[in-house]
Length: 262
Image (cartoon, rainbow, N blue to C red):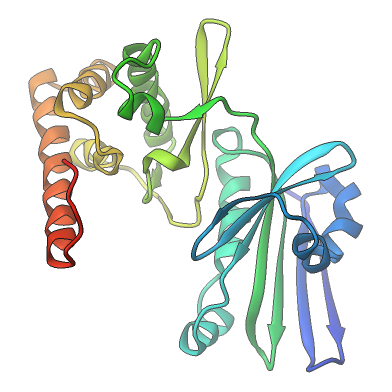
């Protein structure tokens, strides 16, 4: 896939810009070049923790801009010379997995004193209705069993394409209802692996969803049908890994004096 790549130098502390723009969105070139200004001057933040996400409209298109926190000095050195930045990986992986994630538009890196500073990833906003978290938490959520079955089918398609999302958690699975079915997209994809997976690795991938055992059984049962694996074995593996992760996280919370929710 062709991309537009530009490198600029600014003689203000010598800041190097690396800008890669998806040619399908080449009308975003000016917007991307001014990303720091555009990001700082829009207040529509939808998430602010280690990284920050904002929704910004450009030419009647809503986009999500993710600003990555500037890493510490050792990681700045590491990401500059030895490893792709999270912004670059987010863009490259989005191109690689195509329809499984919202359209990538661009990524931008700023380097100061020859080390990584600010970095951004821009993607088209997916107009989702809810995340998988809502039906997991709300026992009365409409069509929740159907949603879990379709989650299993979506995840199976990821795995069949050798895609392993290593942060396959509730907030990172977006869902849009379309007629009588659901469209799924994954986000926060800078931690991925691309390889063939065995059945245990596949079922372990559901563990971060923090599902009740009964709900996990619905997912694992459908996954077993798709793979042709033994149903009881798949359910047992999925629940085993789910419970193991819950124990691990709850133990860490107890050690920190945080209230535990099973």
